[in-house]
Image (cartoon, rainbow, N blue to C red; front, side, top):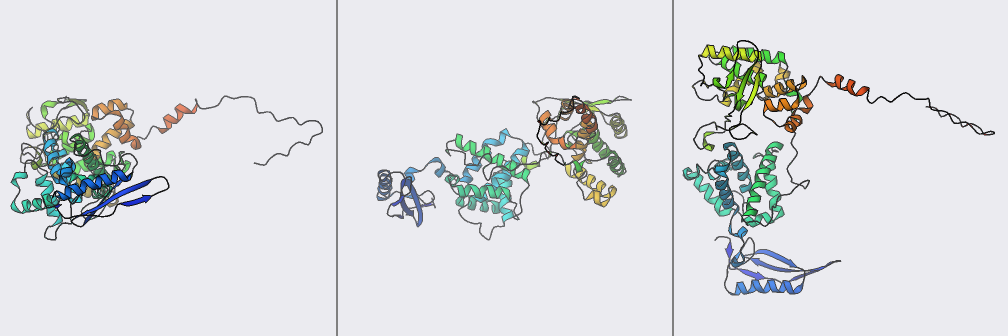
Amino acid sequence: MSNRSYKVRFYDTEIYRGKRKTSYTVRWSVNGRRHGQSYATSALAESFRATLRVAANNGEPFDMDTGLPVSHATSASEATNYEFALQYVDMKWPRISANNRKNTAKALTKVTLALLRTELPDRFDPIDVRRALREYAFNKLRRDEAPPEVRTVLSWIARNSLPMTAWEDTKRVDAVLQALDTLLDGSPAAASSVKREQRILNVAMKYAVRQKILTANPLPKGKEEGAAPKVAEAVDKRSLLNPGQVARLLAWIADRPRTGHRLHAFFATLYYAGLRPEEAVALRVSATTLPAEGWGELLVHTAEPEVGSQWTDDGRVHETRDLKGRAEGDTRPVPAHPALVAVLRDLIKRDGLQPGDLFFPGEKGGLLAGSVFRRAWNKARKAVLPEHEYESPVGKRVYDLRHTCLTTWLNHGIPPAQVAEWAGNSVPVLLATYARCITGQLAELQQRIEGPQRLPAGPAPSMPVPKPGSTPAPRRRA
């Protein structure tokens, strides 16, 4: 291997005498790279030094990274970080969703580049290197399809990846965490992305410990520096829409040619029923109850998140998944507002939909693409909202329609447990997410506690009686 050398040189043992203890450090170098190992006693230091000398005298090569003879190699020194990352991806691939596969590849790409022996050569474009790792090396389905230029990059990465012993160096760990915190242009990454990638890396490190490649998880925990940053989980109240804004936006979208009426019904479903976009695109006519008058019901049982064809087993852009946070095959009934019932009934009649049809197919059939409805929503905001509102967070994401719906339910007295059931959330997550958006109940709540906290009326406090012959103390001014 290129990181082994027979050129070993030994130096005098260093003795450090501190106030509390004395340490003995064995010093040696491998091909000019210096190493040291400290011991509490002179005997232990000399024993270790003698072991190294015997290996050198026997003509055994030494590892330049660890400084140890190859006979002392551990599992961590035998495998490079890149090799471990490939092994980890192959182990996790069949067990995780397509979206998780993509996020895992992104995290491992940053880690791999942070644990190289040397800087990338000038002939490699950093963007191309990241793409080679993310789209091919850490994609089990495409690894063998890598074009020649990608194979050249990955071959260089394989030769220059540090061994897993690099995780025992706190400076290397700090470099990895810094890489997760930073985008390619050097700007800070979003806190949610950093937290997600640190969580992925933490699972990978636990796997390394279970495989006895590492002896302990090297990532900091709790409040240690470098631990996962806090992420604001609560919805920004400024992102919520009022009924007037929603009405104008939906009216503008409905007037679009060809697919405007369908997108109008799609966004209305998010606003009135609080579905997630990936749940709405999977909604079929047979999963709804739409009476001629009054309330109806949507039976949500499938989600179709859009993750990219390169990450799904069947090559489809969307991945068919069970409901988020629910058991396999579970369903979730959601009430359909009378206004939504009317919109969906009109859509069925206009498009001639059959029970097995999707409510909101794409223009060419199949599932509605996220790029299509996001682009339509952004155009509607720009056309309808005043400039200051368009530049603000109000309704900036399609998902804000769901936030507006759930907040409306909570603000008008629907119990949180019921809202959580309709929304497909747990009660703690629901309250943590929407706590800052609950309004309109302050006066009633104040009235509830005003009486119970009022103190009972009692005798006025008596003034102290001065003793005979004493001068009363002057009153203090307020």
